[in-house]
Image: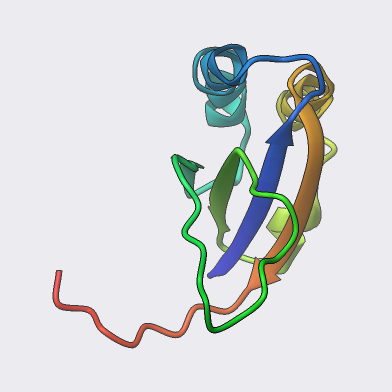
Length: 111
């Protein structure tokens, strides 16, 4: 299982409400149509917590995404029309994104 996570920031000039509406109501259905995605989650950032023990990082993102694939090959294949539409839509609401392929290491799994 391969997991891709992205920190996303809304396009300049777009309100938070416009960003959230587009991400959920327009972009999410496009991602749902794309083949090869096993799980897709959106996380809206509501607030940042200042810590006194470490310096603050870069500006707070508006959200995070989590997309699961069965293999790296599937994750890297963006040639289907459905995936191309979802990728092209990012121009309509994203100002910046930082994407990572991650290895999950569960530490506490009580729930």
